[in-house]
Each structure stands twice: as structure tokens, then as C-alpha cells.
Length: 420
Image 1 (cartoon, rainbow, N blue to C red):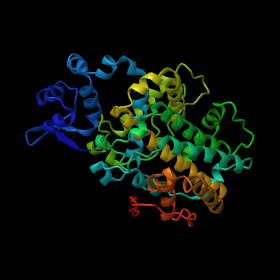
Image 2 (cartoon, helix red, strand yellow; image 1 turned 90 degrees about the vertical axis):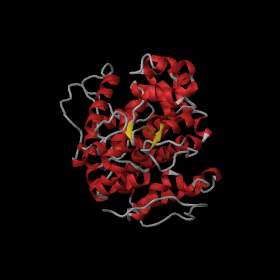
Image 3 (tube, rainbow, N blue to C red; image 1 turned 180 degrees about the vertical axis):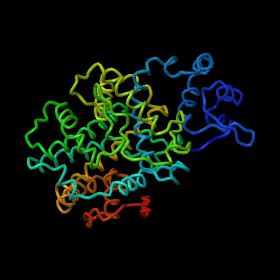
């Protein structure tokens, strides 16, 4: 997390220093005092961006500072419901797998975080194959939906404007305008990517399930596979679900003493991982309580489905008008994190189901035919999530062979770390 002084904020957002101080003192902006000077954290920058672009907003905000986004922009209420629940989920991922030194300095990187996840998981393909792969599985249908997930993940992330930083800091001067031309489409493609990965799981045990009915694979996974996947590979927060009359007090499957300290909190609202889980579960209940019967189960996948429907139909105008603001940049980053991990979990299941050799062959075909032959993709080689993950698998000896022509066309920024 980074801080700027009132003077620096004033210059960056063209707001007077006196006005910024009023925002801080009225509770609109979080701040702290350093050397007798007010300093403002970077996660408030989207809020400042909105204020700098709307003079009427600047006046109204001081009249009703507590819930200004909801009250001054009532059309954002539905969007913010999805924005906030996805933000909480992404922060639970970061807090769950980060070691102490990362939690303290809050310099979260996607490549390093995924490696910490793999260290904790202690991946054993033989265990996954024994406990998650049924005798009635279909390798071909699994591969089909894995590829669908790969294509949609690239489509939703391209042009990979996100850097490896997934903390609370955004560099506005480095925004890539291409990534915000069709903002609702990014939400839609993110959902289809996640949906494809979860659908692949279904075919680890039921080769006959029909996928023409769009919600059928999700319902099947939630009712019949979620529990056992959660025991093996779908760890917190991916194991969280809502069901009527659920008595479970927490879904946390481990405990870290660091979580009780302030440095291990989400900076937006100073929420611990325990509070984030509580809020996330309440969000699930609010969204699905009227839709659920006694057997229905709802997870982050179902949140993404509802968000996709909203963005595609009711909320497209709201999303489009948000395209230049920091809210969508944070949303894009959070979706990127969630997809990255769900994709990685699916790839680990694929290695277990297909075997290392068949998985490597599938990845090589995807790489050579789709990425290597597509110049706009290949130019961004080191940022492509599938390549990032594969290189991490290679470093950790989860796979032992690289595809042909597997090298970057320019500077490589991947950070590989040693297991602690």
C-alpha cells in the first residue's frame, strides 16, 4: 500500500488541499498522520477520481459522506453489490495464502501468491486421481472445457493491462485504454472462463451430463462434488457456499496466527479474514435466499453468473459509464486473481486426470497453435496467465518438459521464489 500527502493528492486529482482535508476529517477518505501531516492511502484513489470529475458531486459528498456512492449514485447500488463481494473474495485469497512478510509489506504479486498456494497445497496427483476421479469420467470432455476456459481467460484478460501487482495500488498514468473499451464484455468473458473450468470438474466423474442447459453443470458440481473437492484441492475461500439452514460456523480449513494482527487485514475497512468471510457469506445469503430451495448450494461461481446476467442486460449502461473510473480497474484486477486461481486448480486436476505427458501435449498444442501464431498474444508472452502458471509448474517440477518454442520475445518479469 502507498500513501500520498495532501499536497500530492491535490496535484494528482486537481482538488484543493483544503477540500481534501475536509474529506478526510468528515470520514469520506481514510487517512493517517505521519510527521504531523495527513497522508492518504492509494485505495482511496478511485473515490478521488470520481470527485475530481464531477463538481456537483464535490459539493454533495460533504452533505452525506457515510455511504456516498450508494446515496449520490443510486444507479451504482446493484453494481457495487457485485463489486464488493468480488473484492472481498479476492482479498480472502491474498490473505489466505500469503506468508507473514508479504502480509506485512502488502506487496502482493500474482506469480508469487500462486507459488505460496502450491507450497501449502502439497500437490499430489495420485491423491487427486484416487479421491476425485471417478470410473465414469471423460478425458475428452474434460479437455474440451479446459480449453474453453483457457480461451475465455485470455479473452477476458487481454490486453493484459494488469501487471503482476495485485495489491491495493493502481497507477492511473499507465492505464491501458483498450482494456476498458468493452467493460461489460470483460465481466461476461470472466464468467464464461470460470464456468468452463467448473464444468470440466463435472467430467471427472460423469461423462454423460448434458451441458446444453447452462446451469446444470454448476448445480451438479455444487450438489455432488463441492464437498469432496473442498477436502482435497478447492481450499478456502473457494470452499465457501450458501445453503438454507446451514449451521457451519466457518469454512476456514487452517489457522494462521498472523490473521489476528492489523497488518493481515484488508485495507478497505480494516477487515480481518474472519470478518471478510462473515461479510461474504452474508452477501451470498442476500443474493440467493429468495432463489434457494432446501437442496440448492451457491458459491462464487453463482455470484459470477448473477453478475454476468446483470452486466449483460440490466447494468450495461451503468458499466459503460464507469469505464474511465478506478472502480472498474479494481474489479478487473480482482476478476484476474480469481480466474487465475480457479484456472490453476483446474490445471492441477487436469495433470492428475490426464497424466503429465498428455497434459503437456495439450498445453503445447494450445500454445503453438493459438499463442505462438498470434502476434498480439505472443508479444505479451510473459503476462499470459497460462504461461505464467506453466512456468511455475515447471519450476516446482509438477511438469518436467517445456513446449516447443517456449520463450519470451522480450523482457521477462516472472519472479520465482524458493519454498520456505
